[in-house]
Length: 489
Image 1 (cartoon, rainbow, N blue to C red):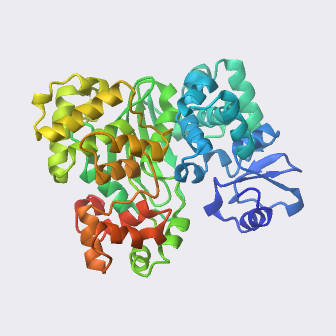
Image 2: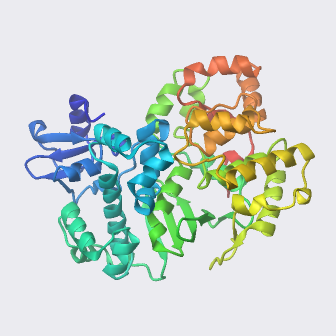
Image 3: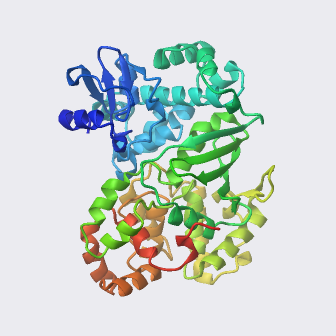
């Protein structure tokens, strides 16, 4: 979008928050870059330059605005609605792969050469993978400076910097303030009193309907791993350097997030995974406008706009849970999963009680005795085949997955039909166009709304909903009285 100058100028002059994260405005006279909704008086159009990423602004020598804080805007929805090389690379960078494995590790996960990855990122985003990762480290550093009382040295390494000098230089360059000056600007009450516990706000593009998002997560929560408590969805997180516990509370203009981490280096990864699980980088206006063109869906959208697709923090975990949920009720699927958690999950200490384990890893599940699984023999075979391929990396499910390739690999497994593959594509892989025409809830909704009854005819009818059929699924599910559609009391 940054190449459409006239449209960008209009968005900046109207301070339209819907475009935050889509592009960034750099002001040539002040050498500052802002989000489109910056509250200051808009600069003259001739002094505006537009960039596709904060990293590109920083590469060009611009500093972040201290008023609108462009580094805290929602992420671009582009990276969650595409499955090409650039989008997959951006998802991996957000997941901290460059900080952990470097650019060669990023390229290896994508199956491309380092030069090809750098060339494509530079062409579309104006910055290479190192610059993009550096911008993320700067954002993490600012968050730790403003929300904790940690010493600056600890913050530098927790944010992913290789040295304190690099940390100091980057913060000064990006924010035009020294790290200690950033800390003096925050309210004193924001300092975390408990080591490893951080409280922050996750922004999103309005509107956001909390009901189906948190309702689904709460209704399908696996005891010991997830729970709904005091108006918050809580769950354990398996992270690269350790584990964590997150509590997510819906608020009118943000999601309140409280993270307890065993290693602060996992902070950017934990935030990225929580945002992805809640689909917070989606563009609800674009989605709803497209779905409203169908006269059948329009009343559902108008009644409760801004529905998101409830996703996951762990793609492999969700694939396992999808198999456990084949042809059984939500309650039965939770029971099966809870047994696995108790027997094979990794215990964790929850200071608030209620959460007891991390969901078992594929490696732990691959060695269990098949006869201990309380499920039909055919589903047992499906389960054991899945976990063994996940454990030995024959099958990879992650933010870098090519959706078409992952679908083909899943369909080749015994016991994997269209419903299982599409629900994994929708909720684990993040395909916004995944569709479930054979789902019982969708077929009931179709019958109630006068839509075609057969899966083939309904798929043809849903062609006009593309590329947002996964969101149409949320609106169709909402016609039922199932608990997944309601925010828990």
